[in-house]
Amino acid sequence: MQTFKGKTVFITGASRGIGKAIALRLAKEGANIVVASKTTEAHPKLEGTIYSAAEEIRQAGGQALPLEVDVREEAMVEAAVAKAVETFGGIDILVNNASAISLTNTEMTPMKRYDLMHGVNVRGTYLCSKVCLPFLKKAQNPHILNLSPPLNMETRWFAGHVAYTMAKFGMSMCVLGMAEEFRDYGVAVNALWPRTTIATAAVQNLLGGDEMVERSRKPEIMGDAAYFILRRDSKIATGNFYIDDEVMASEGITDLSHYAINPNLELMPDFFV
Image (cartoon, rainbow, N blue to C red):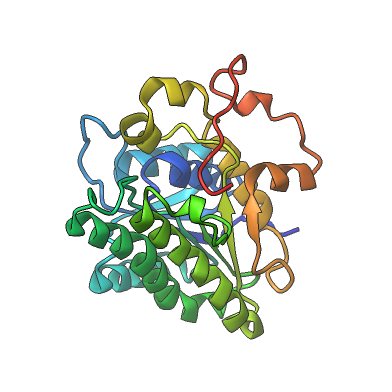
């Protein structure tokens, strides 16, 4: 069981939602958090910036380094990783959380949106993993954690939103390949996905509004699940497609009612599970 005191965690898309929940959970354990996200100014429909997230991280007990990063841009990622290493001395954990979503069918998906999803989800994950790897190889108990679903080649997960599924499964294919490729380095590569919808800006603004938010769980369940995964032995716990409630159950935590936004409503199952 590893501790996070003084460990450096590079998290993409950490200014809000699941990324921030993971950041805050690890900050409570004394981790250094690199907030690698695009949002530098407040948005009317999207809470949080890299600076507000960094302040919350410090208040939670961690150190924070807010960096403006578009994960599609190689130079920005390389500069951010270099700054993280300069500031904290290395990188112990990479969380590939940044993601773009559009649940549109083939005919209704503009190529600009297709390119965005593949640029952020697949290319961004691959790029961040590639650039962080030399430093992860030097770390004690290094992990890469992708926020992506189990690989399941059934038509029901593709029909209706082929482009999005391809982009998310691309992140999961990185887990499949890199877990084996990095095994000899002792770098774990795993995926984490929620059983239910999570109350994030994407659910609020794109997927179902207030009604779906009410039937969702809080992002904190993903933060707690990530905490349990990332403290496992990286030489053993690798190549897994974890589901949040299964991770919690493996730690003896089966009462998840406190994670529900509204415990009186039936939870909405997430895609891909």
